[in-house]
Structure formats: structure tokens, C-alpha cells
Image 1 (cartoon, helix red, strand yellow):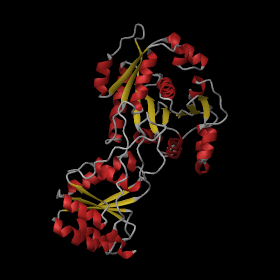
Image 2 (spheres, one colour):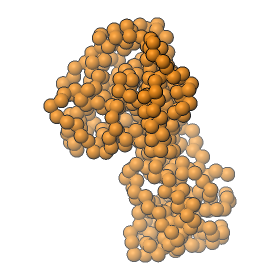
Image 3 (tube, rainbow, N blue to C red):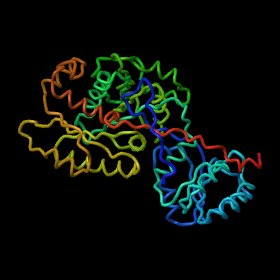
Image 4 (cartoon, rainbow, N blue to C red):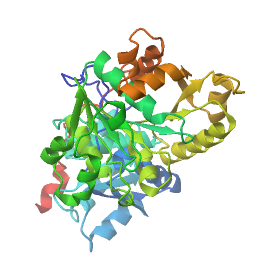
Length: 422
């Protein structure tokens, strides 16, 4: 029996077609006390889940005894995870010892080796936040922590989708903008395009917009930026489509720290159901961190050898950065370029081990006209079959074809065994 199977939750009204982004766990400290090295490795692997990006997690040896000795002279964290190999009759008695040295606000998750529903009910009644039967997965542990600390009543978090080119000129920005347009117009959902190529971005050009402010203003404001300011910096390109444009000036360089964009993206998620990130073709700490922490990553590539090499490197790195998340997807662009030898779509996708979402044929006249007019492909040629590719990609990255949602809050009690010191 699984104790952590989440109940399906209805998607928030007003975003019924969009799978919401992951609920992030707030900045908390977690200490785990394990009796087996395999369990310690399991708990440590949970930190790679992007929901845990703000969490400080440490693991220790010694199980329940180790925790008791530690907290006799040290303060307790927000959450304690204990592995125990004790029999059911002994667990509750031993937890009383832990209660005597723990703060009242600390929560407890027990990892046990006995699959006993009566034990589970007894521990929950006594105030233990959750009991997980081993062996388990890191997703199970992260799910339990999410249920405890990510408020079910919190505002829905928008879904973040990043498009990155495997090679300069592969068309990642064009694909990103057209997919965002199709999501906004087909699903009638507010979408925000964040042009992260501050020096050479094209979102303003492609939507025939020249707003005086944009993403750079939000970044340069540092800690002063808030939701109200961010809303003012956004420009409306069309119904349901909004932009955070790049300044596209070279009067300064744009060197950012790893988490520089993190706060801005979180604020964007708070106000928009879909946030499309137009990520530049570069490799820096902030690009790496962004790719590791968003909901979906789409690699845009042309079907040639250089793109294949780069796409393979990107795919392998992104999978390593986010082992518990969905693998990156692939869109092939400029397929059928005259007189160019090309790698077949199936061979390309199989080589980089990514799902192929669509192929966009080369059409210089159509894309050139759209770019020169500051329009999307659907505006230039509404009945063109290329629009179906953008629509299919949009449905996939927004989760519409397989809608999902985080489970309901389990309503677990505050640990009553910890209230003895309150």
C-alpha cells in the first residue's frame, strides 16, 4: 500500500487547459538521520528535484538515536527525516525520546521498513507528519515534503517553458514566439514571452513592438522589483500575449550571477499561466541554472551534424541537471533546405534520445515576410500547415494533452509529540 499517492486536483479555474507549474518548497532546512547508506543516498538525491531548489538539506548517520543525541545540544530544523528499522511496537516509544529534544514547530517524516496500515494510522494520530515505507523513490520523498510545506491554497504557479537553440541561427526564438502565440490564441490563455537575450533579442521585432522598458529594467532594479513594477514593465503585444523584451543595446555588458533571473521568473509565474523563456544560445551559470529549474525545455535544431553534436551535449547535460524531471524535447527547424544534405528526423531524435515534437519546413518567403512585418506565421498565412506544428508543440509543453496537478494537502496534523516543549 502506498501512503503518499496524491489525490487528483482540479486545475485552477481560468487555466483549465494548462498544466500548472510545480509548487516550489519554500526556504526551509531539513536534516535526515539514516541507518543505511542506501537510504542516505536516496534522501540526498531528492535535492536535485527543482521543487527543492531553495531547501538546505543535510544527511547524518545514526537514525533515531543519532537525532536524539544531536538535538540535545543543537536546535532542530524545519523538518526532521528519520529512518528506523524498529518494529511497530517500539517506534512510538522511541519517538517519545525525540519529542523531548525537539522544538514544537519542527515536523517529522519517518522512513520505515514495515508496511503496516495500523502503524501508519497510529503515527499520524500521534502527530508524525508522514510515514513512508522503504524502498521508496526520491519523488515520493519530495512529494511528501511538498504536501507539508507548499500551501495548497496558494496562488497557482504558471508553467515555464524554455526554448534554446542547439546552434546559433537555428531559430529557437522564432519557434518560441510562434508557439507562445498559438498557446495564447488557441487555448485563450495569457502567455508571457521573456526575451533573455538582452544584447541581441528579437521578441520586440517579431511582434512589431518597441517598448521603452523590459527585462533589463527588472534585473537592474535588483531587490526593488516587485509584482506591481514587473507588471508595468510588461508590454501587451496582442490579446493574451505579453512581452518582457530585451533592450538590445551594446552600451553595457550583461554578466549575471547564477540565480539572477530566479526571482523575476517566479514573479512572472505568479501572474501568468504560461511563461515562455527565449533563452539565448550561450552557456553561462544563469543559463545552466534556468534550464535546470523550469518545467519544460525544448531544444531547437537544424538537421545537420553541428546541430546534432550540440543538441546531444545539451540533451545529456540537461538530463543530468534535472534527473527527476521530464527530459528535453526536440523541434527540428528549416527542414528541407535546398541542396543541403540532412540527417533524418528519426535518426536525429534517436541520436540525442529526445522526443521529436515536430518538424518545421524551410520556407524563406513565409518566414521572411513574417519577420519583416513583425507578425507571427499564423497572421501571415492562417491556413499554412506549419501552424499545426506550432500548435502541437504548444499543446505538449503546456501539458494539455496529459493534464496534471499536484496532489491535495493531506491535512496532516502538527506533530503533537513535539508540542511537549511548546
